[in-house]
Amino acid sequence: MSNLNFTFKEIDSENSITELAKVFHTTSVNGFIQIPPSSGTGTIKKIQLDHGITMRLWNFSLNQPISFHKLPHNNVEEGKIFHISYLLNPDSVEIRSKGSQKSMHLPPGMNIIFFSGDTEMDFEIDTGGSLEAIGLSVTYSWLMQAFTDDKSGIKSFIKGLNERQYPIMLLESSSPDEYRAVSDIYSASISNLKSHLHIKAEALLLVAEFFKKISFGISRQTPDNNILYYGKIIMAEKILEENLEGIFPGVDTIAKKVSLSESTLKRYFKTVFDKSLNEHYLELKMEHAKRLMLEKHVTVNEVAAILNYEKVSSFIETFKKHHGYSPGQLKRKS
Image 1 (cartoon, rainbow, N blue to C red):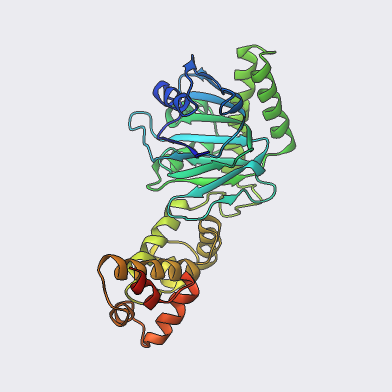
Image 2 (cartoon, helix red, strand yellow):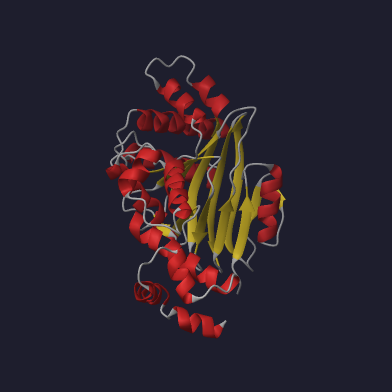
């Protein structure tokens, strides 16, 4: 059975919900999708809480894997859109950020994924996996109105998030009170036991508490102002890509170029790509070597020279260790 795939920019539009329903070979009615038996069981529900804030309820189990590919998107009129996903079963979800070839589960204790609308990433659920979660999407303009009377600095913090020139992604853990609120909202929304007004009030409080928490920097996972420097990590990868036909530029050099400390760069790069800068650089370099030989028909000796290896034997050894076969074998196959 083939994988299900859904590509979108903003999940909350009517068109996105309609297209998501098509993935399951069904239709949506007023933002509600009933998963058909051919695909699994459960429901997906969109609830418009207010102008500028939307909630989604995910409650399904599938017969086949599904990948959600989120494309970057900016809402120019109302500023950035921020997404907060609270996972009640975080072990079932894998995430893969732009540029990473490997998916990763959330670190132990983490059950919140926060990211801006201009982030590009994948969410994956394997066969037999289920998703029990609520997602809240809020616009920058809504947040600024919600925190109009704030004097604690949260409003200026949100303004700073909106003005960042790169995507933002943060992995967080919910407090016991947050988890209880999420569970209550989830159960009430699925069963329709409580009024829309009650659910809206709890959801608004949840958003307020979340931004208060991250603005005051109390996360255990990311002590540096709680923000995972996703955009700067992607910039760091780009620097690696620009030096594939040279030598590794050095962690200190890259850190200066992306305005991060070396320790912060190494820690967050490992979080995003699941490998160190050196390991990722070598992987990129060996993939580049493979492309040179397959697409441009460059000889093994020429590739070694292009990639700045002093000895061809060193290049051959590294290539074989990475790919599992020698450059010569690759040339003969092609």
